[in-house]
Image 1 (tube, rainbow, N blue to C red):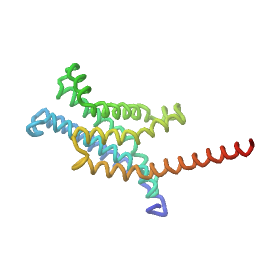
Image 2 (image 1 turned 180 degrees about the vertical axis):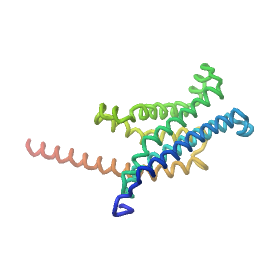
Image 3 (image 1 turned 90 degrees about the horizontal axis):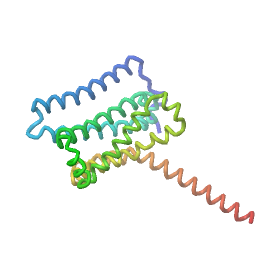
Image 4 (image 1 turned 45 degrees about the vertical axis):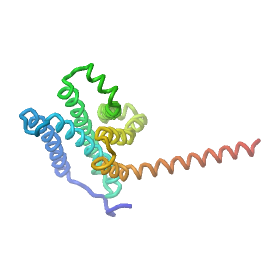
Length: 222
C-alpha cells in the first residue's frame, strides 16, 4: 500500500537542509547535555540524567532508522533512505556516549568496579552486545565497504533487527520494569518490526513447502 501514486521527491537543497537540521539537532543536543552536566545544570544527579538521556535518545534514533525503510515504501519514495546512514551513525554516537558516561563518570574508570557491575547486572552485557553490533554497522556503512562485502553486507546490516530488541531489553531491564515508559517503546518496536516479521514468516513458509515438495519428489523416485 502506498500513500501517493507518484514518488515523492526532495530537491537537492531541501535534502541538504534537512540533513543540516538533523546534524545541528543531534550534535547540538548531545553537546548541550555534556555542557549542562559539567556546569551542573542537569539537576541533583547530572550523571544519571546524562546516562538516561543519551540512552533514551539512542533508542529514539534507532526507531527512527527503522522507520525510514517502511516510510520509503509507503510514500513511495527513495528519499528517506538518503537519511538512514546518517541517523544510524547518530544512534551509535548516542549509544557510545551512554556507555562512556556510565564508565567514565559513574564508575570513574574503575575497571574492577566495571567488571563487578557486568557480573552483577547482566543487562549491561545485553547493552554492550547491542553497542558492538551498532559499531559493526557504523564501521561498514560506507559505500566502498558495501561494495567490497557484497551480499555479506546486507546480512550484517540485517542485524539491526536484533539490535532493537536487545536495546529495548537493556532499557526495560535497567528500569526494572517492562511497563510504564518501556512498554511504549516495545509497542512502537513491534509495529515497526511487524512487516519484517511477516516477511520472515512468508519466507519460512515457502522454504518449508519447498522442502516438503522435494521430499515428496524423492519419495516418489524411490
